[in-house]
Length: 120
Image (cartoon, rainbow, N blue to C red; front, side, top):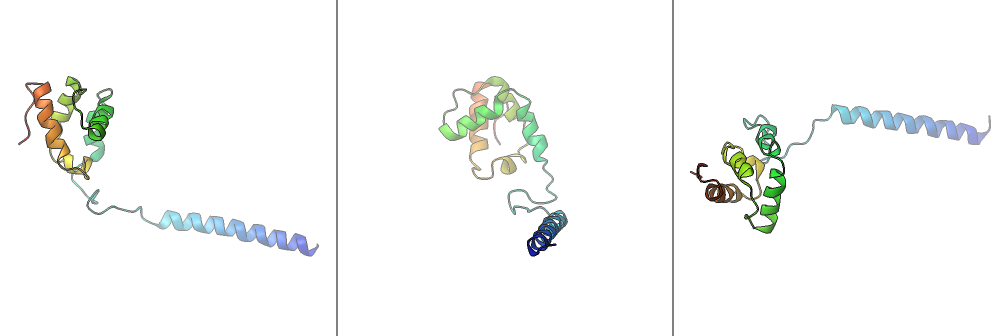
């Protein structure tokens, strides 16, 4: 064999070894956690919190538009009912960057849907 063939084979073996080694190391590492946002062992299930809003068609989009535009006139009654039914413990985990948004939206939803509970 020529020296180019030997170098090519060594290069391929080292490349394959590096790829398999980094995959093995990646499997052994724990996923990163974000302190304060999603504490491990948190009693609040974020999937459960968000799923009640995703069950109402277009609700998450309406809430997102309200966050970014500051306009709440397009909120529908079904979305307000779903948001008003959320557990208050979900709010800090769902909206960690704006703690004032959930009480504001709940108060506005109380005007849109008169029988919904107001924020305590």
